[in-house]
Length: 176
Length: 305
View 1 (cartoon, rainbow over the protein chains, first blue to last red):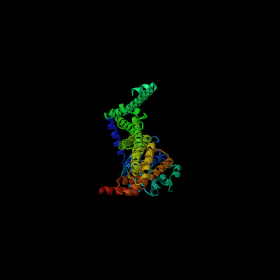
View 2 (view 1 turned 90 degrees about the vertical axis):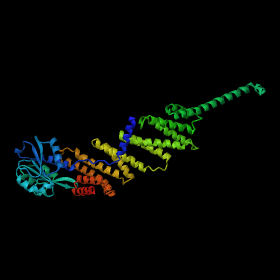
View 3 (view 1 turned 45 degrees about the vertical axis):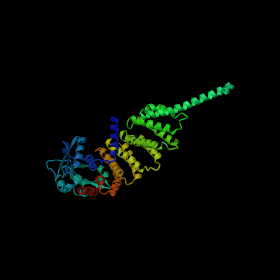
View 4 (view 1 turned 135 degrees about the vertical axis):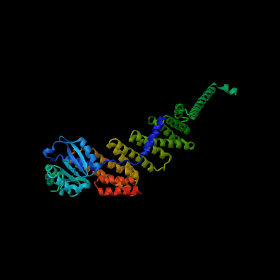
């Protein structure tokens, strides 16, 4: 009786599988951006006074996908000896001394204000809207041929008070 | 008469031998028919396992081995013994094989077609069991080789009783089941490539037969997308930028491969919510936000209705 039940259930299960599969609920773009951001930490040198405490990534704008992915990254990675801490806000918080400021597309209008405020303070400004590497950010994500690439402005990185490495030039779209 | 009998002793002896032999032969023939009769009776009483040894003698005896009844009853006895062994009993599959083989021999000997309806019913029953086993094997043990073997047996026996049977729909159903099960297992087994490849093979087979098959198109689209997403998911955060580019390129190829299947579904049924939702996801993965939004809006509009 048990066998009959088992095989009946298996048959039902087999035919019920004729339905549709399920797409992975996974934000591939956020994963890419998180991996890029972590990689950028290898190509810049932050001022000595920022080499203690947590390594802060400040996300400006609201995107649960990117916040989730960055927090996941923060739980498994460090920058040197520094733990990674993710902060998220809709505008810039003056009390935070971030190492990276990631301005999401929707908050791009804040770039001018942020780049002015953090000039020389050792914050790598990353954006994701066309043309912003020429308007103040050091790194700007762009989609080219269905792939995520990045524009790089060495000038803006230097203005931000960071020491740069030429290693990034060959991997980026250099804008200046 | 008495005189004749006494005329020649040798004649009398010869006559007695002949009578004896005739008696033996007659008895022997009677014994075989008797065995067949007894076996038949045991089958009526559902004592199939006791009937089988008798039937094994009947089918080799010269007097009964060409009798379609012998093979027909043997087929019945084995079929019922198989059924008694439990549902979908793969370990006892030789019983079903023997039943099918016996029914075929009975058909070949049955020039009067006296047993054809029953033999055909046995074969139909056995073929359905092979199909059921083939499907269960996919779900239960994921044994595609054995499953396909049973599916081929189903086709072979179905074709015997119905030579004009069109297997196209059954092939579509079987390979769709295989594809769906393995696509599901691909997800459940941490995106194991082997499961993904079997799913693809099966679903592509369905599309060879029916390019407009919605289920196969959707499942293939999802499978390619999931393979691309898996590449991204498995990627470590500190993968170097050159390697990251290679992973992106490979994922992009998979996302692009998933696209035509989903577009096909959308073309066939512009209101298919699954296609709209999937296209939004695929275009987003391909960083085409404009297109992703287009399908997002179409899905929202559909839901409003």
